[in-house]
Image (cartoon, rainbow, N blue to C red; front, top):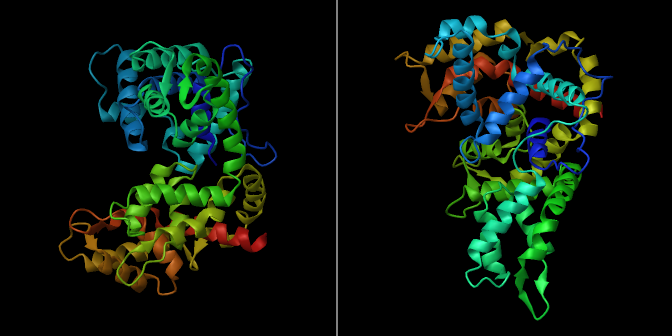
Length: 408
């Protein structure tokens, strides 16, 4: 579900004069009861504000983690009255349990926290950057700089360049929509009259975003096309082929609202040819329906209802007829037995062989999911500890999805 990234983007498109856009909510009927620490909404808002102030600097998940680590270390140091960063032992002792949750639990926790924060603020969470008047001011100044002749108009290429130079963090789709709405000169359709454009920019973006969220994420064709464009951006030679590692990396960058383990579930469909490459166009089409099922709000509600029942069964706690402890122990021993040098890394073929020896019943789809858990290094070797740490949860998620589809 694309809750967190959606909410942050909505902060940027909230006008002082317009009513707040509703944040997505999890149906209370299915939500797991959680107690929100009293100060958590304020902490979350403050941290969110600091992240969003780092425009262009903190954009990837890894960068956010690094920024967050430093941010909270400095915060702990200030609160303890020290000017030096808190050491790891102190930080660990002060870290609440909810910060150590699994990714899916954190996601659900944050959704509840966002909704709680929304209620506390009278139904509005405000981000102090890129209000309507500020966006208009930035655009106006950018267009005026580009308008060397000071005629109040720009050619379409210059206009598009100016929008990009404004550094508003717009997506390609948003830029295209703005270009289609740009007022043109009466005598020349290739000239844009930018003073008439500035006042309509913000409303157009807001409408586009809300419409895009509600429509695009329920449309498998849109998802397939979007993923195809993302994958093609990593195909410098236009071969139509990428490795599993490349597709996994690009999938994460695509930000379609999937968690790390959900991406691993989707990678079960990344079937390689005999040279080790995946036809990413076929893959994008094949998984688009999975992405919709895993991110669409209506699907999520049905999914939550099913999981509530499924997680009460004994089957939920086993993978390939093994419980988590036995599964992880078997996998770890098989991989370590092959790793004679005890370096914690193996080439792909060795990892595949060890996994098949540990759990002979594993299917090709399940194996593909596990292999996506670790990216090869520059020597083509995989850190197999990354696989053993998350293998059970990954196959559990894949099993959940398959059972849900079978039930539908």
